[in-house]
Length: 236
Length: 236
DNA sequence: GCCTAAAGAATGGCATACCGTTTTTTGGCG
DNA sequence: CGCCAAAAAACGGTATGCCATTCTTTAGGC
Image (cartoon, rainbow over all chains, first blue to last red; front, side, top):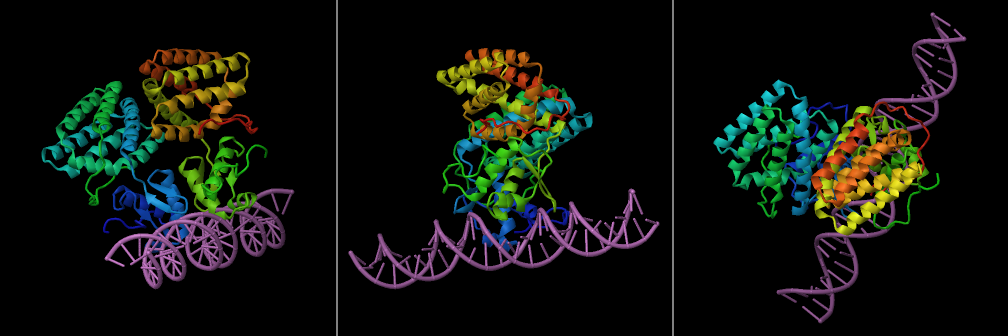
């Protein structure tokens, strides 16, 4: 346990204990420091974080509403286990959201915004050429999130972020073993070209197709059980 | 206080107090029995419902995560006030979701499903001809929700339901004063025609345009302050 | 008579206590 | 040696208590 601690020098008095606990748990779940299906005993976690059970329970409710944990009656909270069907369904919604975000992005973004996206794209390409999966993944996420962010639609941004977190683990694991790397890279090239041309419809379609291809065929969960490394989420 | 009470003969032992309280509050908020901006004092509400403050507070957290209430530090929970900008943004996302739902619906629904949609459509048309706004609204909602439901995508269904609840009040109020009723009706006719032809893209576009027209121009909140009548949500 | 400040009431945040259920452990029997 | 049952420990659900902050009301001064 290195990087993640509670009270991260944030506005200490502005938010309550519940938010801090919820953020802490969210980070750990998203980063896969807790395995899916793992129980989250409120007493134990509460004393680990030096809080009472009350804020811990309230944080569970928040995370449950966000789809990151599941609370069973009389059996408490467990880390949500995303089934293959869930992945398909959520990924589909994600692709739809990003498609529309791309359209709005083309209409709203400034030239500087587009330039920044291109810069990130070339950084990602560099990581790709170096076979640097870690940074490739990070930059890939950053680009997608940036496009959504540039849509300017806060509701869209929030829903996308929530959904994106639910898929973070499986997306990361997939990135580690995905062989068809160059295909995804080619698609990203096409996306960037359409973005530069400000062709909203085109970007949207490319993006949706891109996500569709990457995730529709999602097959078995299996996957290794080693925790993920500490990588920035960029999903704020 | 007539229609809405807690323990609605539901699976009494299956779900906890928190869920019952949350459902109770959700219904009242969606049905506009609580005004936007109104404070929700946990002590008072708790003793009204004959529960302690603990489940009440946990219910607040759930509703906050769903966007129905806002919790300010040291000032407690208030019913979420949806600004005109919020309405535009959320309505846009809703239209995108329904568009994709329509496409999936065309691909997945059985002929009986489509027939049922048409039946609802004609019921709605009857209500339209009778200038029966109450039933027109109810059936309109039912059709939209049914289309989403027929998409078969649970993630999509859930997100749509959550977002839809956030807009229920404003949608209902708008229905009461919207003059361009016949336009909406015509668009629904077109939607149904495309649905019968199973033209997914076409249905999606019509639907998105339909919602866009209805909501993009949303101007001022104002609106009367009388509570809404008791109408079935159909948003389960 | 109005504005302001201080005291008291109310409210939310967090901790803890109690109870019933669930899970685990252990001891006895097959 | 393994399986099952009973007891004990653990755990979640709810209620309640205490404290700090906020809101309200009232009393004093301008």
